[in-house]
Image (cartoon, rainbow, N blue to C red):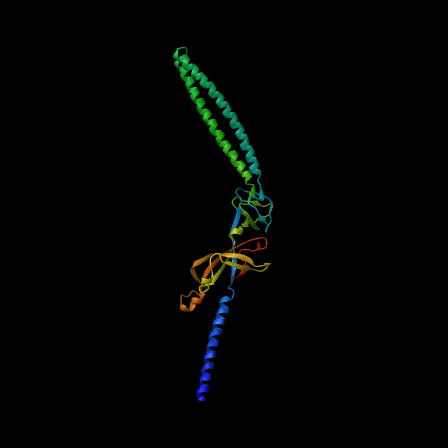
Length: 290
């Protein structure tokens, strides 16, 4: 009888043991199947639009928050000196053209005179001195023609420069982007090379988060993730685009076995932007789930 009860006790112990093992595996499976969640932030690359010439900001053609297309007009500068300089340059071009025309006429005349005197000199009809003077006049006409041509080239270059300056008064978007901020108001004077506004390139917006080393094996390149943030009507789709191979330590920086839990890796994900999620901004906190 005692042996019978002893056997039953052993069976109960074994059943309890296997039940515990099964529960552990069950809990482990539930843990592995639970979604991965991380906190992160938005990172973006700004395009700063600068002026290549100084001038007064005449008109903004766009506003903050607008999406602009490549070559769309952003703003217009007003520069009275550019128009005046172009008028002066154009007048110089007209004068240089007239000088070159006169130099060409003189060159043709001196060439005919030189050729005629060369023939007359060979027949001793004119003196050697008169013949030499005609050659000198011809050579001087050649030099005058070269000088007039060089002057025309110079003033034409100045004219093109002034036309370029006027063209720079209308500043266009270098690519499709979001108008993130403006730094001047209409009527203000803007020195050359000064940023007037910043654009946010949608293709350069990334989601940044950090994952511990024990989770890293579960994260793959091109893996799809969901991103949520305050004000988002629905989760934003993104794909893992970069997994750092260099580990980082969260503070305190102590290289010890006790600090293994602090070992993390930088993860980047490209956002698939559309009209619904175009409100994400650099620095904005987000939540990531797999």
